[in-house]
Length: 527
Image (cartoon, rainbow, N blue to C red):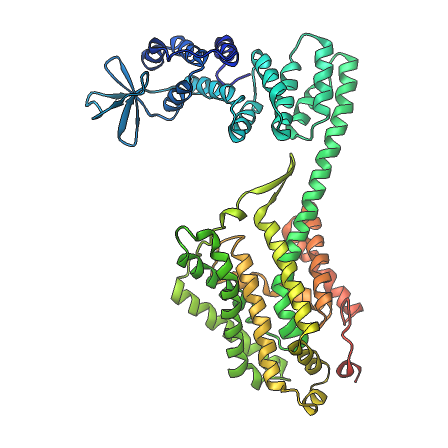
């Protein structure tokens, strides 16, 4: 039933039928006057009369009433927007706004009737967005009296998404039909959908007195539940991939500083935070018409700023602590506290908001119960690009050759002329720069605060250790395994128990296989 009630829908039906027939008339001044000054059913009848005219101005008048923009001056009805008034019947400008004008108040029943009328009017709009919005409005509950109009719109609709909605709307109306064949046909139509609302309608018929309807309802219900289950599993898989991409991006930098260099860098999370705050600063610089392009500058900026901070840390503190893991751990933990306090001093202790560009807003509708956010999709693609870039850099470039040589046998690399101290600085700077990219990506998923990196440092170490210290491919595999495991366990036991279970699993796994999933091979390891 339409929210305005069966009486309102019945009053609107013949009027809207005239509208859909293509007849156009001048806007009825008497109907506009009754809409603003009438009582109860008179105002409902006025809506019917306005819709029947087919004049585009009728939509504007109804919207003005619903949005509180209609006023009266004596018997004259005005639409007032932005301090400017125009006559609701003729469209003529009225300046200035009359001093005696009064607001027209619409009660809930009238607002519902206006909303239903506008939804019906827009079903045949040439604008796809309006037709889609109208269909979604009617999907919330449509009166069976409007079935001919919905069927007419369905016959003319070519868009697949809108057609699917209209089919469900029409089927839900036919379920109330007295014709047994019509009800069976409606049940079969609902059985072809993948909407949760279809499942609700079919559940109501699962105990119908008619055995044929009951059997058909059960068959259609099974089909809908299978599609809904598929959507849930696909959503869980995408959530696992999304979490894995975040873990991988956060752990990639650590895979270099810890995995390749053996430095336990407890300030890695703060390097992620620096990348996020760099993105925030760049965003503020791009306020205006070029805002949607700020990420093109924020990505390299986060990479460079975090990389320079990392190189500075390596040159001033960490290079004196190689081979002393406990002292390195304590020193980098102290550095992390300094960086957190520095950010609080510069930006404040409160979180700051980094807004998504327009192209990262919204999501991709895959199924009726599955929407993939564009922000997550772009981050997964971004992580794939970063991983490919890391593979090329470490496997195909001179710097990558030097890093691998120093990692496997520092003494021999030094003997053949490799500047090991400089390579250490560049490698630590590269790991820190990758952490900055992680911060840039994380800024698109939530607010940025001084404690941002603290939530990822433990998970990053788990990924690196589980994958195999010094093995980048192992880091990628470990991120995927932990991402899927976390999301699968969360759907069963909740987030807290899922993290505990993953941690316990890794502890037992490392006890049995200390080298992780993949062991690093080389002379240094062999000796």
